[in-house]
Image 1: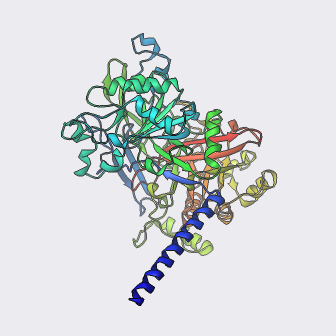
Image 2: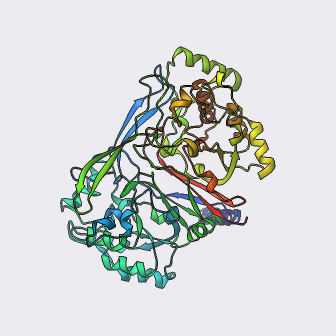
Length: 576
């Protein structure tokens, strides 16, 4: 009996110690002010219910066009991706007709496509309206309705909604039902076939009520913001007519506090898009969320992503015939007579426009032998003799932590390097060296761990033009008809790693430059150090001088992708 009592006391003391330790750990984390990045996005893969299942909406496809081996030093993917894929953004032209059509639902917001929405509207303070009590509380094929009373319930418990808030309806629907097939049919298909209850969504009156609170951005963890079977379009128009935008297919909203977190949805910038695939994230804890919330409220946000359009050179033409990347194509598939608009999908290289470069782009997976071409084997020998083993990686896009791709921004202005190479050496790119970075540190302050370093070359600002004047971006530099864009060498990447930098960005087409040998070594160095790149930016000069700037980028969460289209923005505070 005494042994049992002793054991119980011992267990109690150990449990108490662990509870105290956990409490102290929590206190320490709070005091450290470290923000937590929360992924609110669905995984996009062909065996998931990532796309709208009704004909003729196209299914998501990813083609591994090239893998590392004799014919390619890189893993190259091609995407067939519709804007109604995974976690996605809806904008007013989804339901609001263009003004010139002079129809009952025409309005100025009918021109606010995904490439026209002001970037401040993408983010704000997350206000999570808990409607889990509605989940599955309806007949088969019918959506339980989120009404204004549910929003008023939130306001009574927390606070009144206001401009700058992102209202997120949390029902738990995607958390529960977004699974691989065949279970994944429950997410959308079974609802459309009236085999299961619909997903909870707001009714039109709820949208009108939110408009009285000046709320411009919403989100739902349901598959759509439109209640089934007959309120989908009325609810869409009820909100979009005010210029609202919203997230559909969010997930993991339970990880957010009811108020106080920063929420944002970033999406590829498709020309004329009434919707777009995207990446939703939240940031909670520390001072960062309020800093970003205030930037959005004050409309202090700069869009760094060029518009994706078939008229512009969004992907590399390669060196030599037959070595081009998949050109960016818009593919029409369904005509809306009322909107006088084609629904469309896109066929594109995964590195089209603004995109992520994960370590696996240039590194093979562990345990596989890859027979490079003889020339590339020589480059690898040179690299490894100087820097050690190149390394391997399975870190594809969906595995890159969100906080790796965002941070306080340090711009390294290398525009002075333009014109520094001799014509007889072309094709050649001016090299960005550690000395250039150190010179920037002397004038702007030393780099801190987890800063995002952005090389400002001015290349896309100057050369990104529509056909037929589009050769200045890629073709002329690659063919030696003009100088290449400035690009960091391997020593520059190694120096950044030594400073604790995880993300390197550029307003040039890529971080490699026009010389294939130097380019590959730069990507090997990035991959070796588990660093990521964000390429194809512009408008860096629009960021106010002496501002406290924060770089935010997120790619679409595509499983197994070796690139990743996305959107980059900068949120800033003037007068820092």
